[in-house]
View 1 (cartoon, rainbow, N blue to C red):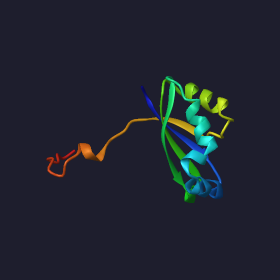
View 2 (view 1 turned 60 degrees about the vertical axis):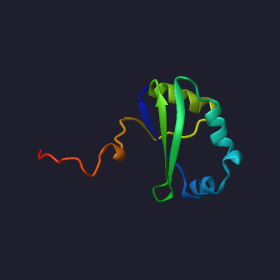
View 3 (view 1 turned 30 degrees about the vertical axis):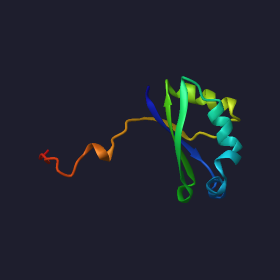
Length: 101
């Protein structure tokens, strides 16, 4: 299933509030997760107060499936949805031979 990064604009104060809130008390995230489906599943989020952004990783069939989850969850603002490909640092050992381009 494709991976997506979903970008949400949020005020710094709201983002800092999320950081202080225990997961079991976060009604917005709990509602969002409960509305996920086989077509769209929220994996994790990164909170960047300095940029006033929330970046969320999703596995989804397509961007429309992600939009459907948000529509059911109260319509949190989405700035952008981008398909992404993951490159892991652990896949590259320090001993690997470096070839010239």
